[in-house]
Image (cartoon, rainbow, N blue to C red; front, side, top):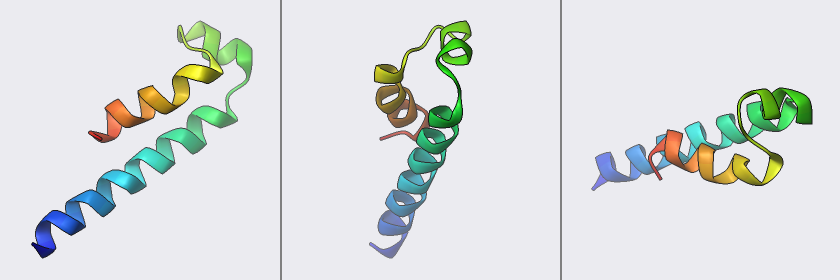
Length: 50
């Protein structure tokens, strides 16, 4: 049970880190990656495994 909670917390931290990093990019940089601001949440969730 503790391991499962620790994994969820770790995934949440990875998600927040991804959101923070992607949010710092300019619209032009996001566009070069094929993303826009509305994609940040879903991309971060996928990368964190949520």
